[in-house]
Amino acid sequence: MSFIEAVVLGLVQGLTEFLPISSSAHVRVVGELMAPGEDPGAAFTAIIQLGTETAVLIYFWKDITRIIGRWFKALAGRIPHSDPDVRMGWLVILGSIPIGVLGLLFESQIDYSLRNLYITATMLILFGVLLGFADRFAPQRKQLDQLSVRDGILFGLAQALALIPGVSRSGGTITAGLLMGYTRKAAARYAFLLAIPAVFASGLYKAAKEVPVLFTAEGRAVAAAAGEPSLLAIAVSTAVAFVVGFAVIVWFMRIIENHSYLMFVVYRVVAGLLLLAMLWFGAVDPLGGA
Image 1 (cartoon, rainbow, N blue to C red):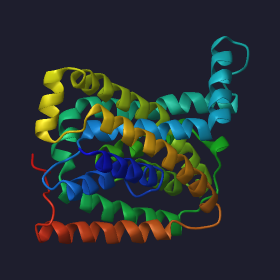
Image 2 (cartoon, helix red, strand yellow):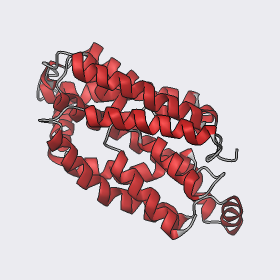
Image 3 (cartoon, rainbow, N blue to C red):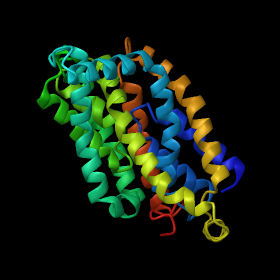
Image 4 (cartoon, helix red, strand yellow):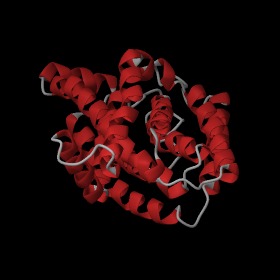
């Protein structure tokens, strides 16, 4: 992977992570277009997501530190567990369990078979239509202080669907929130908070497995021969994703207050159909050379 490719993929990751359009799908497809027959890989995607998730930490820093602080106070018996921030802390933990368990159980399928671009295109269209339905017909009255254990679990299960490229972590979680009656802003806010443990756990897990290998001469040689990203490429993509991602999250949280998700729904459906057309005419390899 060249320096330019690393920058482009970091830019793509930053632009798409917080929008309900699937960053993993975009990184997968753009990577294939820049280097036909080569998939950047699930590990690369998971690691550069650390950049965008760091942007979430900074954007929600006051909320996160308050929730964590009050959660520990509740553990120490200094405040009741019924405190809204304490409940939020427990619900984020609870909602993170499904994606963690399923991610480990189906790691091989996630890294390989589920990255088939036919699946990606189908998920882009299917969940785009579902997002449009939820945004148009769901009541959207509930706020996060009304979040229940049942809703927390359902949010977590929706987030777990994002293990399939094309679904979108934010898109799946936001759609579930809208269908449960939460407002656009409440659903998006919880989607971003819920993603923090999952993304950091996944990214650090993949980094612990992949990065040490690249410190060896043999590992670098194998990666170069296979067209896989180097340490420099990973670092560059992650840094670019952080900078761009922070700007996008600021914009996105402002725009959803007064606008529907229609533009994202249309984009998903068009992108899915375009990807199917490229697959039909052989412009891209559905398996990325696997």
